[in-house]
Amino acid sequence: MELAERIRQVAREAEEALMACDDPGELEALRVKYLGRKGALTLLLREIGKLPPEERPEAGRAGSEAKRRLEGLLEEKREALAKKAKRRALDVTLPGRRPPLGKRHPLTQIIDEIVDIFRGMGFEVVEGPEIETEYHNFDALNTPPDHPARDLHDTFYVEDGRLLRTHTSPVQIRVMESRRPPLRIISPGRCYRNDTPDATHSPIFHQVEGLYVDKDVSFADLKGVIAAFARQMFGPDVKVRFRPDFFPFTEPSAEYSFSCVFCKGKGCRVCKYTGWLEISGAGMVDPEVFKNVGYDPEEYTGFAFGMGVERLAMLKYGITDIRLFLENDLRFLEQF
Ligand SMILES: [Zn+2]
Image (cartoon, rainbow, N blue to C red):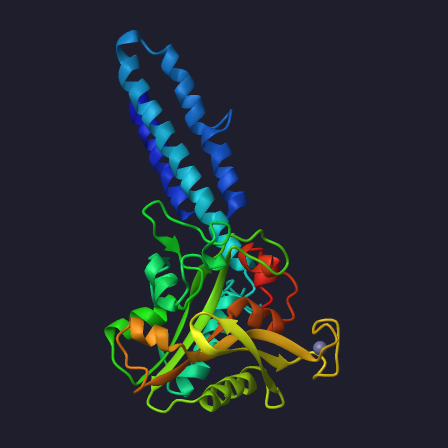
């Protein structure tokens, strides 16, 4: 038989054995048997050099093809057997690995909670732009051009004269401009002020604005709404205190506080031993603001209030540094 034919025959035999092989040890034995230094195919390949020159090309082609094919098959089989062994090593009685689940940011959680509470009292959620006109952010809210809040040091201005809103109050104006009373809205959102970051200041922060306009709305309604919110947010024993304050867009204006959630009003470090935690400002909508949006102050009254989302989250979760909210440190975020 010609050498080329003998090579092909040995290759077929080797191929059949490889296909039937089911064990890594046996596979290695087959490799040695056919492709090892004294393997059947190796020995045949060595004979090619001894052939007369005219017979060498055919035998050479048959040899290299057989070798390439068997080596490929060996590799495939090795991988398949390794995979099989791995499957066998798998203990199906072990509990599965839990895929890591993302969570909502603590600020988002607080905003959702605030929104739920006010929705329960019939408030509707409205959003407004973060890049505002000076008119909506200041003028319409009865904040004249010489008011210190408009200072370049406090406000980020955009090149075209607009600005990054410094509070969520401009949403009140946008809603009143486009709708008629009765109105009962809250507006959660991001605000910006040119503050140097420290434990209690952040140039980016969140507020929730509230507005209630109808006939015969009184300060008592405002107190009732804020007290109901405080109890749902921090528990049934929380007390609310209002003290006179000044804001350009409300008259009268008040600062409101909750009894300290840490010491129940007895006095502790967080409340600076006063028993009270200042939350934010509120008041009756100034008649000038109503005039700016075309409401008749003789016909309608209303109240507005704000609240700092970070402040509430810090109180609720006992967080002492506002910067943690924006640093995206997983060790912090995973706690919520
Ligand atoms: Zn306290």
